[in-house]
Image (cartoon, rainbow, N blue to C red; front, side):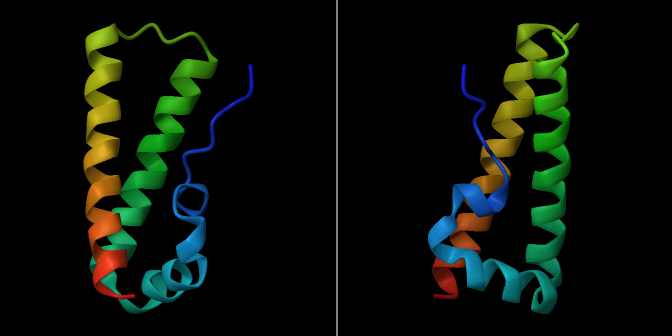
Length: 80
């Protein structure tokens, strides 16, 4: 099965240049993107290694990641 890529550049390829700019010029965007990357890494590692965590825990982590993604998208949309 092909592995999904959830890093911010794969999620928003059309905003590549804006993401790079905002990571250096907007502290809030930078913080959110770092949290998103860390959470994505955690989720993908747990999935790859056969997570000992409960389904509810994994679902909660994915919901947190989705919330961060929504916030990042809102900032990207506001800075087009």
